[in-house]
Image 1: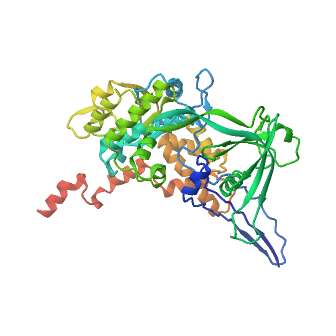
Image 2 (image 1 turned 90 degrees about the horizontal axis):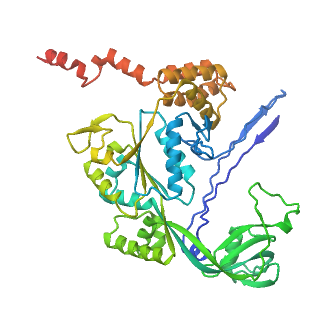
Image 3 (image 1 turned 135 degrees about the vertical axis):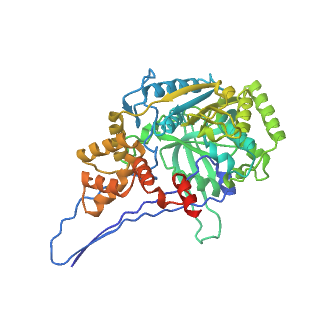
Length: 507
């Protein structure tokens, strides 16, 4: 008997690169090892079997509803492409969002508000996610659902204020002394007896003009090991904090026959002296500064998540200090984006707060989304478009989204099939497109995974029409479910249609 065992193991490590070596010693970081072994044991009993090809596991993150979004899909002239970066259709809305993003990058529309309004399933959240990806890493982007405010252990206005300050960044500039050079050699002396003494070592750095040997302590050795620094790397060491930054690989080592990844960056060997003064830029949000200054744990409060309500006096002091830094040229305000989904869930108190907050000097760009028509404003008996008060609605730039065409639905389904790693035949895609047109795009997307499971059960390789039909029979859409309720409403409790008849029966 012949045994063939295939084992795949994926290890995911938790790394926090922003912390310095000294801060690492203060934090208790649990390095998590997540093993996902997929083992296949094939037993052959005097029979020759052919092993089918297995697909490599390319990613280990969860696949979400908008995980395929990579940006807004615009060219350099802010013109929307037909299908790009996971975005399909909605050309007018995407172009308008691209204009907003461009103005955000230039810092021109701080304190303004934008409304994404459209029917359910027309890509409002997708456009907001595309804006977040297009803005960049340094520009803060905070997301919030309107219903979240009513489940937090703090007042609604405090939750909104914290969300506002999460979307406002402060770019702080400071001069610091750094040691920058190319690593020539790393020598680490380990004690003969385990635990007898701490490890020591020597680090040899060089520039184009000089070469120096530095003594290493245990913390620096640990930091070098964490960053996997080796000979030929160009590094920068912050003298104040001990933080090590790997700048890249020296061009002199570009001909080495080492295994290089696609992300390997080659840089020139630094010139001049090893020790020099440099301007370092840190980008933090106002909320992070609030938490650090309002808790006894300092920056460790950011890891515990125990923020709670922050006193107004603390915020006033921070705003005053930031204003001083701005006048001295040490800091710069970076207005970010706050996205509130389901904005119709906010009540009249929240809208009044937003009216006032948008007039503040340090306000982010507010992007809200809703799928409601003319409906009641929460907390009142008055009706208004989108469930938003007229005075707040007057402040908004409104971007409208339109229903997807049949061609757009087909392209989106193609993208989702690739994202979910499911092979679907052309006939099955045509059927899914027809289902998406007749019912909804979200329902058609949900059928992809269900049809893949049906295909797997019949031991097929490609999802066919019969698999989609099987999933369509098992899981109903809204229209069929509503029709069923209308036909069999007598069998359900508290049905409004049978109320009178039930009363007659009781009497």
